[in-house]
Length: 352
Picture 1: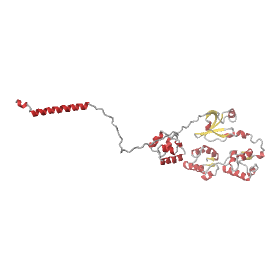
Picture 2: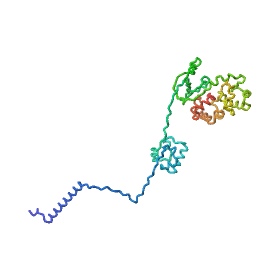
Picture 3: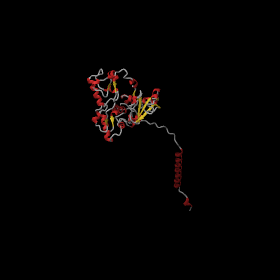
């Protein structure tokens, strides 16, 4: 019975070997988990076979405004000659670059170029001028121009804004006395306002000069510019048959003169000649012959000296698109008719 629990010598050696292997394995696991060796820094050596990448050197121009850059400046920024030519062609169409948005709209730039230029390009800031307001007398505001004011006041200023004409006088004692006189007391206001004079335009400033224009002139030398015939015009020194005919022909094309200065628009009458006889000219009848913009054709309109084909065609085209004109103010909706042109031609137009 005892012999069943005894090991042979070979079995005992096997058990001892198994215990030793277990001890060494447990010791290995313990050392592996608790021992951290000091690692030396790894030196990375570039392999000889890797291609060398060349870096593009970018030199930023001293002048940050691209409008002043030359081909060399664009080249130093890394642009090819082909792209530089595209940029030059684009600039020639615009005349000048005014903003980054305008510059980046050129299709020569990709997103990477735009990011680079965004940090380089600088446009000069537009300096806002100091607004100096001056005191004026607001005498009238209306949707239609008033051409009778030049018969009353010396110098009229006006401003066209939001489809309304505003008329101003200098804020002085003379104008205040005129406005407060019984004749004009209820005709015009005299509100004192502060206005930027740079935004005002002068209508007329020669009433004083012409106030006593006929003081030393004999009645038989006066020529009414809207009713006189060639015989009357030829009495003036410097006006012969040809010039007299040209004046009357121009008057008929125009539809009548509304002021004396229009005589200078006649061919061959220069300023010096006009100044020599202007004192004998008068306007007794300033009734003008007007063109109906609701019925006149392009051919009829363009015959007027102040209306070229583009204006005539625009007036008729707008009428065809939007129907009959209700008022002359609708002409201001036509793009090519600015305030200056409108004020010049409106006296010779009508709506019927």
